[in-house]
View 1 (cartoon, rainbow, N blue to C red):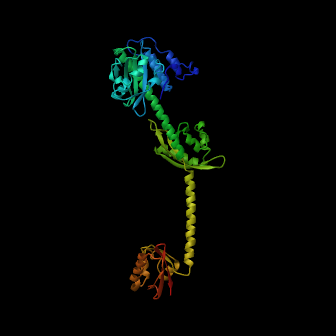
View 2 (tube, rainbow, N blue to C red):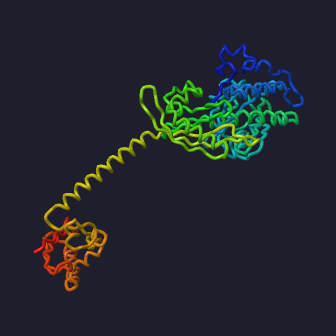
Length: 453
């Protein structure tokens, strides 16, 4: 963040000249006579504060403050320094009466020997150097200021209200000099105003960044924010993404009440209004899903979530909330349901085929846990589908052969062979012999197709 060396380079166009609150007009009203008390006039302070509140560019505001300070005494030069984001260096943002100073001096380190300004920020206290030629904290920087004839340098660190460092405010003279009581008062007053200007600028910058992050987050998540005014009634604020969700140009701002209602079906709008009325009565949040109907015949599904804002009388005056475009979720859900329906149909067809084959078939896990039996198996054994599941299929085997069946199964499982295994077992359902062909699928014994002999 750098600023102009003088008012002429501050980027003030001629169109500002007639504006009574423009930086140039404010500067023209800055006092030029020395004030022995070290205090600014009320008018001067108000003019600077108006610039700050109007959001004027920070370099211009700092230049005006510096010139205001310089008008308080002969031979006085003012510089204002801003702390870099990493907190390691200061850079000069304003030096209106020292031509080329900003480019020539460059940056100053925040350290124990960082000239007056860098040392002041490092110590978190004011540093008043009477003569830079003899003070050791200027050893690395005095060569940069000597071309300007500077000998004394007084600096005061600038902080936010929370105590975070912002930079430094400095006054210079071309002769060795210590500050008087009036000088100290001048530095304190000027530092306070400068700190206000810088902190407000940083807060506004942070707000702009936050708004940009929020806008991008809303765009990526297809969610928009809104404020609904109960007293109007209608939308008082729509974010850019809220406008896009509703097919509206963000530059148009929020729609009128009727425009908003026209995108909803009569049933959906009535439901939304009923949810709002309930929220107003019970002071509860709103959660509602609706469908937007556009003139071209396209539709969007949205989910609305909002909470009521209550005034001091306990009345709901606004709803603050978000609208999420869930069209893709609805489409994905419909596609999934369609796929599941097809799977169920396939399962029914497969079951029908298996039930009609001229053999008994069943399927089990590698550990022998039965998962499926066809209808011929159930009819032959006399077991229900539920009774035959798990290890209960053993009840269909004659007690004399039950253990043999289990041993055979485990032998097949441990062998991990793809060769078919055949064993003859007696069943309880009929005193006949079953030939069980145990087949291996992959490396797991899965399908067993008994063939009654």
